[in-house]
Amino acid sequence: MKQKIRVICIILAVMLAAACLPLKSHAMIIDKRTWKGFVYTGFDDECDKSEIKLEILNYKGTKREVTIPTEIDGMKVKVVWSLSKAKNLRTLHIPNGVEVHRALADAPKLKKITISKSNKRYSVKNNALLNKKGTVLMGYPGGYSTLKMPDSVTKIAGGAYFSKFKKIKVGKNLKTIGYNAFLENNGLETLVLDKKVQYIGTRAFSDCKKLKKVVLGKRVKRIGYGTFDQCDKLEAIYIYNKKCKICTDRYFQTIPDGATIYGWKDSTAQKYAEKFHLQFVELKE
Image (cartoon, rainbow, N blue to C red):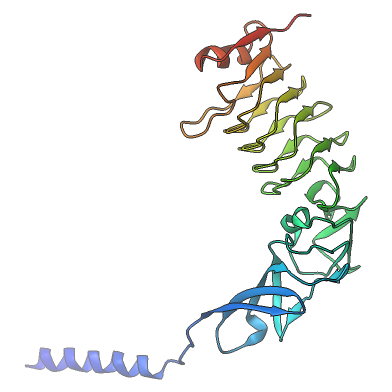
């Protein structure tokens, strides 16, 4: 009997302690709303608006020059995902604390970008959005057909999704191209990666439907998983590094079936071609 009473007392004590805890409101997803042309969403905890992080989904306004808001209705803006609906946008001002790099290439007529002097995340050079040190290419305005990266750039950020540019002018010091950097680019037909380029990330050029020719210089050490997967029109890929590592994956083709590989005798390029039954043409000195 004493044991039962003891158990009941413990249960009552736990229930009393739980009742004394402060109540927390349930978080709710904010439905899509529009503010001065910006379409946004976020999480509303019905408690402290200053803690809510908003995500701008697009801009449907008609202005040619726009400054991204740092907050809307007392709620802080965290990221801008796309600017594909910004049909008239030519100039974009980026404040401190807002992430935007993936959205720039979506804006069909965007030519100029600026950042606030207090911006701790980004720097801008020749209208290219870079990290603070100027070494990583984060974004590029979609109003240009050619992507011209500054020579200070050593890396293209992963997930950049530069999907519209027809030409790429590689900087003198570029070494690394991040994953998905040019995923689903429907403008690029010829790709030349020479100078100091060494590493190409996973699916960096996957689904580039117009890509026909690829030239990879002597310094390219690694071609990532599925780099040219679903590049159905790729006819020729030249691999000048005899020991270039060509990663393979069970789900994605690194080099598509229809492509002819040009490489040196007894090179990793030849071994890859033989393994996957691709046509191989030996390069001559």
